[in-house]
Structures are given as structure tokens and as C-alpha cells.
Image (tube, rainbow over all chains, first blue to last red; front, side, top):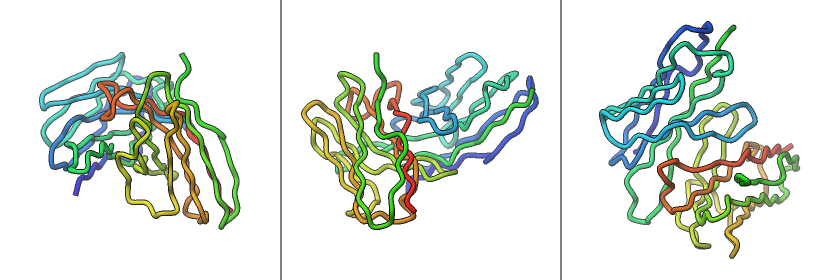
Length: 114
Length: 115
């Protein structure tokens, strides 16, 4: 069964304290892995897409990496405005029914303290 | 450009009632998907529509139904509401059936509370 697990569930950092969020996945075949940011009461906001092992993407203080079994979201010198829930989603290879179904993890709630 | 628009933003219903949620995708996007997000959980896939046809359905009971209109807007209907249906319902649009390099674009959701 396709599955996505994120850790830790929650993370508190001091401003400037770098850390990493983990997303491990089990899928029969990976079409893509996506990172989203979600603020309270809002919909997920796209951050990155990764397609193959070894790929890396960067945006401001965020850097996403991908291996064959997991992805990491590295946050360098975070600021309070980086506080949010970070969601990881995988898009498995297309099913025989032709359904494109994103499978989300439960997210990591990040709080950055000033 | 307008993003994905969902209405209403909040809704309170009583058990057993019916609800209709609406979504307008980004102009030019032909794919609309619906996700349910229970508090503290990740979004769960409910339906995908592409070119006005159902292209996929998640593990949800038949009380859940949806449709896509000629202008690509979509409705999600839930009958015989249960307390467990309380959640944030998200609509996501994409120009392509399989999403895009930028994944899906999500709306802000409809917060449904069943009492």
C-alpha cells in the first residue's frame, strides 16, 4: 500500500536554528514528490517538486532533497514567518484506472520562536 | 489572476442534512480534485474530475458525490451528514490531468462543521 510518513510531528526552533524535516514514502512507482506549506485555515501552498533520487531544489531558506525512500526539507536560519505546517505528498505511477491521486503525509508543524 | 475560489468559506450543518460545496478553478485549468482534511491530518483524496468526467474516486462512501460543469467549475455534494464529516474540504486545480510541475493549486477550503 502506498504510504507517506512525516517526522517529527511538531518542531520548535529558535530563530536562526537550522533543522530538517523528514518525509519517508512507500510507493510502487514515483511520478513526483511535492512539498507544500500550509498556514492555519488556509489551503496548502506549493513549494517544490522532486522527480528523481539525487535531485535538489532551493527557495530562500528552504532546500528539498530526494532519495529513493525519503525526502528532506532543510530549513536554514529560520525566521518566525516560516512557522507553518509543512506537508509532503507523493504522486504514484498512474493506476490502471487512470487516477492521479496525491498521497499526503500528516505534516510537520513548525514553530519558529523569535 | 484569480486563484482557486471555494464557497462558502465556513458552514455549519446538522447531522443528516445535505451540503453542497463549490469550486471555481484557475482560468484554463481543466482538472479539479477534491480533498478532505480532518484537523491534524493530511488531505485525503476524494475525487478527481478532468474534462467534466470523473477520473478517480478515493475511499469515501457513496454519500459523497461530485460533478464538473462545462466551465470546469465543480460541486461536491455530501448527503446524510455525519459528525465525522466535519473537516476542511479543499479543491485543487491543475491545467493537466496529472497535475503539473507545480503540483496542484489549492483553494483556501470550506470549513464544514457538523453538529
